[in-house]
Image (cartoon, rainbow, N blue to C red):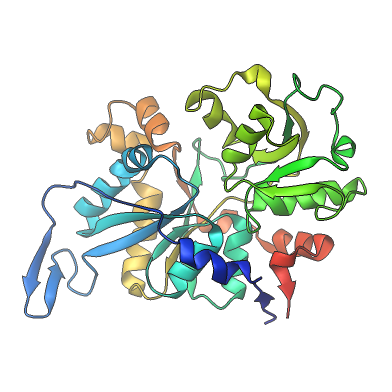
Length: 324
């Protein structure tokens, strides 16, 4: 199998790993102890604590609250405490999982492919979805502030503009935008002035403020800036939407026992959803649970086809997916 050569930013970003650390207040641990350490009471061969890595989460309190139902579920069903860490980039998350500092990572499709081809032994155990019977697919979107730059109405108008991307390993914040720009004859590296804002929520914020003339986000992250950052909807105009992107995977390290990974996938698909959370009092209603967690539940890993990521890599020749 050919492997991706991940650019030097992977190593640099590792120094910025774990900007924020949060943990759930989950009551009793569900674990006993032995001379060798804690013992999982659900399954003696399972860990008692695992670490989930998230990228670009600026509000630690909001992140903790959004993950609380899943933390309670895993404590009750698997006897495991879920500790959450955040990093400044997907590069730092790849490094964290490679070094054994995080066993679960919420990747984007692009960073997941990079991680696989970098040799990480990981397994997709579920794809977050925002409605029942969906596949988790989403879209990259190009945005402008029509009040500041009313003359920019299409991707072709991005030429020469200060452009906010999110992260070099972001699917919706860099790879698909690069594909879109190239389709209208604009180089994403030399045809614009690129700026990496850090996340798909930060990029449109910078556009709204005028720090970037144009930028890229996705249809799931964009609503956050209206609700959490109180940016008027009139400050953002969508001028391009990408082809559909396959759903983002929750990837479990093979350092976790196979039986644990199998049980985790089963629980995520069956129970980690808004109706279950509401029925068990983790939040007040299905709607409230969906709002709190920013998703409805999980879809089967098999619904996503990541081969198109490799195809788009070949078209864009993105530095983040050069093949050695």
